[in-house]
Length: 307
Image 1 (cartoon, rainbow, N blue to C red):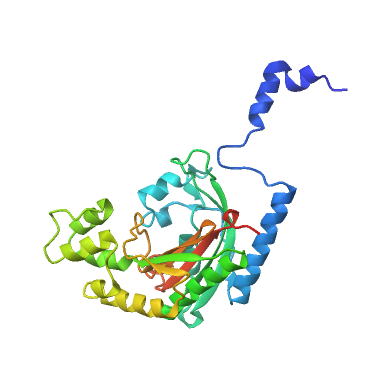
Image 2 (image 1 turned 180 degrees about the vertical axis):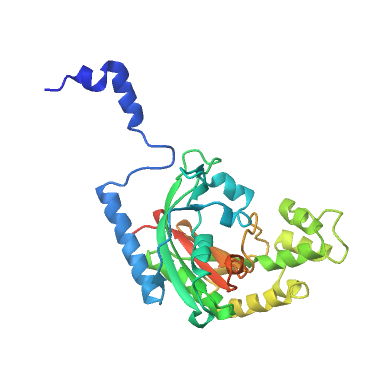
């Protein structure tokens, strides 16, 4: 028989073992029932995206930091786990699939292969320092349509997100906007960025921009209002609003959610029983890795779905 004092090192050893049995903040094991539920949700999700014509790619869990340096916002930097490996290289654990897919795909794809419909799945690790106790390890599944810059591609992706939410017995609400509207206004005057961020039409705004900025902040702007400043975005939004079900898709021109990062056009959030997914269009991401290609996609956090 094992001597418990020898095995645990007495009370001090027992306390040491108790501490080591805990996991780091934000991660946990999924045991039998939870694991089975996760796999069931994952299988249904994969079946639906495959039926929609998407093919799976598998991406690495770590990569060098340098290829993404110009893409990563200070906020994303703070959330990522980075370390120096044994070769002295700075590497990071995967925290965002989309840039990793662009880095992997851009050098390998040819124009004749486009458009491509791809999906991926796996864990991302994010240190949410401002949310004590929140999940840091998230299992995600995402899909991307690469090589199609049409409004029809936007509509296809948005409809697919809605169908995925409905498959899990929830009513989808998808809030969308076009980040190029704010970008076009900011290009005319940097003061617009401050006004939109603070939601105050300050005195530094040029006279010709003050009325539209005020309307955007108040949530009163319409597609017709933004058309003179961003005609392409307005035309795209008008076509989308005609094609999408207004009971599920809501245009919020006043939605300025933090930094735009690599997004260049449509940006959306997907709600069911809470926030389930995010996505948008990023037409200049692939050219940063060597091959220009339009792209739009979304990523669901599977832990937020219910069977």
